[in-house]
Amino acid sequence: MSEQTDMPMGDLMVKAEQVCKNFGHVEVLKGIDLQVRQGEVMCVVGPSGSGKSTFLRCINHLEKIDAGRLWVDGHLVGYRQRGDKLYELREKEVAAQRRDIGMVFQRFNLFPHMTALQNVMEAPILVKGESRDAAKARAEQLMERVGLSDRMGNYPSQLSGGQQQRVAIARALAMQPKLMLFDEPTSALDPELVGEVLDVMRDLAREGMTMVVVTHEMGFAREVGDSLVFMDGGVVVEQGVPREVLANPQHARTQAFLSKVL
Amino acid sequence: MSVGETEPRPAAVKAVPVRHPGRWVAGVAVAVLAAMLINNLVTNEAYNWAEQLKYLFSPAVLGGVRNTIWLTVAAMVGGVVLGIMLALMRLSANPLLRGAAWLYIWVFRGTPLFTQLLIWGNIGALFPTLGLGIPFGPEFVTAQTNALYSAAAAAALGLIFNEAAYMAEIVRGGIQSVDEGQQEAASALGLTRPQTLRRIILPQAMRVIAPPTGNEAISMLKNTALVAAIPYLELTFTVQNIYSHTYQIIPMLVMACLWYLFLSSIMMIGQHYLERYYGKGYSR
Ligand SMILES: Nc1ncnc2c1ncn2[C@@H]1O[C@H](COP(=O)(O)OP(=O)(O)O)[C@@H](O)[C@H]1O
Ligand SMILES: [Mg+2]
Image (cartoon, rainbow over all chains, first blue to last red; front, top):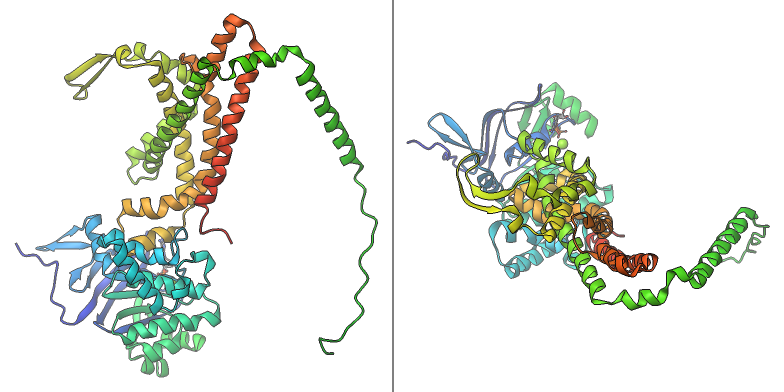
């Protein structure tokens, strides 16, 4: 029997083919084709409601896609294919796929009943079965890496937004993901706190992490991004090298959007 | 103008405060009523404090207190466990499970606890035998209900099944109060649903669940008195038995109330610490 679950993708980390998603009768994604190479930082921009968050959520199967195919690291996301038939993965198998994909949310979504350090330790212990000591040691390293070694015992409510988001990044990194998804990680922050989060993301990019970043920070996109994707109305309107797209957008919708945010 | 300069401070406000004659009248009225109550407690011989003292720590009363305590604990533990199951059924994607839980809650909240307890006391008439076997098919083990079943079991089951219906709604409200982003973050980290529920959702829901559960526990302490319907020898039924031959009705009932007050006060202290424990991470 031919198992086509896995497909050789060369150095591609994410491959989306004609990905569609509907909510009821509303078509939110209308056939997205995208490829993210290993080590690439892809920035996704576009007006509110254009489907950016939905696309990110499809990548780690928080949303089921209605048509098309989506692979991460050579594995079909959420399904197994035998012949030309698709089988839904069990909950456990979906959870296993998600381990390798870190996600950072606009609203942080830290666990409020746990300290910052516990937030970072929790998933490695529960999901990977790591020992407490090992998880704690790495969590401490990660907290240091995001510049919060003096905040490990604080609860999220005792941290600023920028600090919370940095803990959230450390929490995602604790699972040692191959791919990091960021959904407007700085949009909920006061302007003076944006920089500290972007700094952490910049370091991460420099270390070679593959990242898909939905953002309105055009400076970050230009400086750190390897590619820029402009989405509008559930389709990819334009993509290319960030500097070029930002300086010289080809499409009228891109021009209109950029003239508002730049 | 430099900050260091000494300026004359503005004059402090001196005003005649508003008078509250109503407060004085109410205060005097309460003081008079309190004095009357104390006078009554001291001079009214019907309280027979000596009689109360004689029985306060008697073996029969202590036995009743013990039964009241274990019934309260059993009913709350069982009610919480069953209530969590019912709450999860209510929130399930399966319409059959949702419907079953809804029906259960409808029945047990819509009928009086006292009446339910009377039925539990007479359950042998409803199900004369209990058996293990295939539904609608043969049974492998069969036993007389009344041989297996004691008044204690009837009392505990009656209270548990009733409490579960109330706890289910409290737990459901608690789970629904947790931000959806928590489930998302946990899923994105690769936690399974049961792990998310146990480690992320329920601990946060506890902050909302704990205060009404404390109130439920205190109500339960008092509701145990209803199992006299079964009948089972908890505190109130015990003092009824005592005054049925001593005829010291009021002293025994007041004494029982003192025991209930003592126990519920301890529970209120426990409730305070429970709420503080589950509120961690939210203060400041
Ligand atoms: N769970 C949902 N149910 C129904 N509609 C949704 C849901 N999530 C998103 N949408 C809709 O899908 C569209 C795209 O949303 P989203 O992906 O969040 O856009 P963006 O992140 O680009 O602002 C919006 O019109 C939004 O209202
Ligand atoms: Mg969005």
